[in-house]
Amino acid sequence: MTLLGHTTDDPYDGRDRVVRWIATAVGVVFLVVGVLGFVPGVTTDQDTLAFAGHHSEAELLGIFQVSGLHNLLHIAFGLAGVVLGRRAGSAVAYLLAGGAAYLGLWVYGLVVDHDSAANVVPVNSADNYLHLALGLGMIALGLLGQRIWRGTVANRTAQ
Image (cartoon, rainbow, N blue to C red; front, side):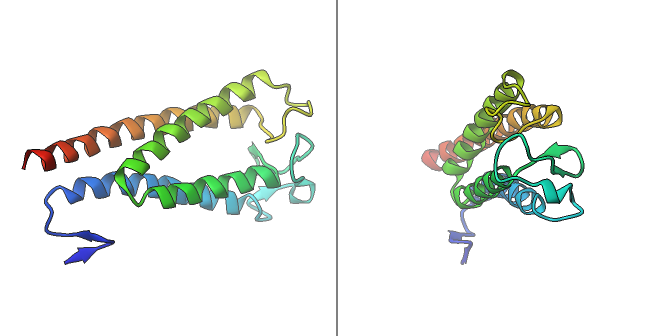
């Protein structure tokens, strides 16, 4: 019998599924956040939402500064998680690379002048803390997923 393209009689398939589920769940959260960035009421000052740049005063949940580009990046990152979550190896890569990217955004947010033209995403202090947490969290999930996945591959090879 097959379930989501995998046979259900494989005793190690469940571990692969956990890794894939984690990346897919992260992707879905980013998709939802990206869409909510365009929803008035959930995003305050929606009338000031700029496509890019620090001039956007719109804030998701009244906390996190967003722009059209910022929201579209969340949607694209979410779609990547859903697509890459279809295989354990790519799910792990998504979590590790995504975590590294968010740590990069954290550093960017620390060094860029929030009122300068270089702040194209845009980011504010709340975004910086969130990017740090996302980066560390995604890397932790990626390392956990890698350990689960490698254990699964090792067990399959030993059979």
